[in-house]
Amino acid sequence: MIQRQAKEKIEDLARQFKAVAVMGPRQSGKTTLTRLCFPEKAYVTLENPSTRSFALEDPQGFLDQYESGAILDEIQRAPDLLSYLQQRLDESEERGKYILTGSNNLLLLEKITQTLAGRVAYLELLPLSIAELRSVEGALSSLNTHVLKGGYPSIQAQGINPEDWFAAYVRTYVERDVRQVRNVENLLQFERLLALCAGRVGQQLNYSNLAVETGVDIKTVQAWLGVLQASYIVFLLPPFFRNFNKRVTKSPKLYFYDTGLVSYLLRIQNAEALFQHPYRGALFENLVVSELLKNRFNRGRRSNLYYWRDNAGHEIDVVVDNGLEMIPIEAKSGSTITGDFFKGLAYWQKLAETTQGIVFYGGDEPQERSTGFKVAPWRTLGEY
Image (cartoon, rainbow, N blue to C red):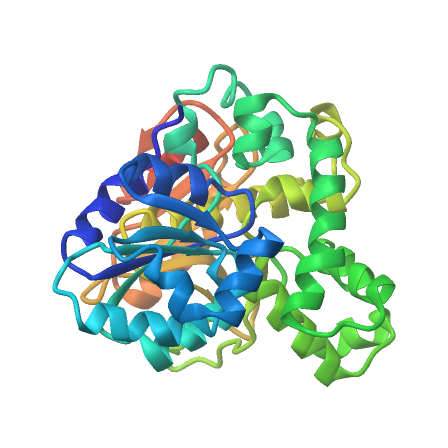
């Protein structure tokens, strides 16, 4: 069993709220973790057709069976059940009575805000982080291997071939989950959009360009990207708007929650192919951003990550907004530290009048520069 960082937070939330919703992509470990945290609770999956039919046709009778509480898995399959759950929670003072899991953010979040506001705590569980993978033998043996495999538990813990696993994952996701969220008529075009997104990882989002290459209109691209975000496939990193008297970019950047999935979509078949691959830098940047996001989500916190770029091309990969301070972070896939690593941070240092800055890189030796910049190996991402 791989120890998940979110375990302590989920148990803490269950002591404070009447219900806890654990959201995240399919196969990220939501079911395993919630059953581990609450072994005394009945477990019910709404993926089962007969169970789902019972919940939809007779929600009161269905919940009567679980009056003492339960883990309701894949709750987005029966969203109307939440309206009936509201009354049960209002009539009970018990904390952590119901644990909900779901692999669709948009549908469930909408229902939660309408019916369970103030009654449910919300936590997002992403695939395994670098900190969690330290207990898996060989998982962090090399940067390229880690980027290729990603963090899904089935690949890391069960040793399933990444190419085979992601092929099945994409097929299942496209054929079932996409149609559940939105009636996508042309699945081939949707799959093309997914592949085009992989080719734009770490780049500023351009809806018009994606629409032209996908062969659909801009509104359709926007709707389909909404599906990908709702299903925890991709996320958008917003720009940092403090302009320092300069014109800044206002388009978000596109990233995937898992580098293994991007590698599969880019048809990278082995770790050796990554050494000279043109997307290696972008994939490493994706790794850094997604790891920082996991570190936030595993502690029940919302994202405080941005990027910054002005119209002259000066850019910071990640700006961490801690309220009173802004910490700039750069991602460099090279394993040898060079002066080029610090160009962006040096520009930001003068602009923002700060001495902080971190460079995560593909090597193994940490450094602390007299300028105040830290150089941190990629394996230490879990510490930040």
